[in-house]
Image 1 (tube, rainbow, N blue to C red):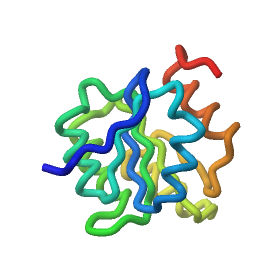
Image 2: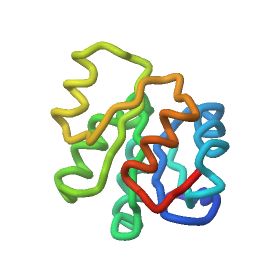
Image 3: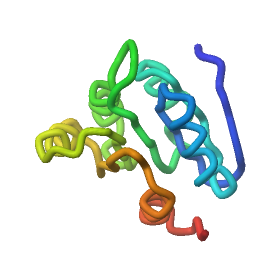
Image 4: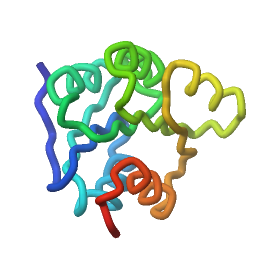
Length: 132
């Protein structure tokens, strides 16, 4: 089991992000309104989902991570849960990348660099009670 890195209060969002600065940006944008549990690898997010999936309202999933990428992790989670929103984050803005993410079960795709408005709008779409 991984050591959980938990931040904030509110509805639970699981965040898979291996880059420290990208995670800090996500935390700065949504951390005052959402409880965040941080995973640094694809395997860690799958493990966190197995523990917290029933409480989690949203998963933010980076595609490029060590040990298991975000697409593989998305597919594993989606095989267990057809309903949880999984928003894939990628630096690749090509239509093929979006299509590949959607084909493995992503609910939506955010293109990096993540902006304040894009992330807040995405969170509010899936967790309507979060008001900025």
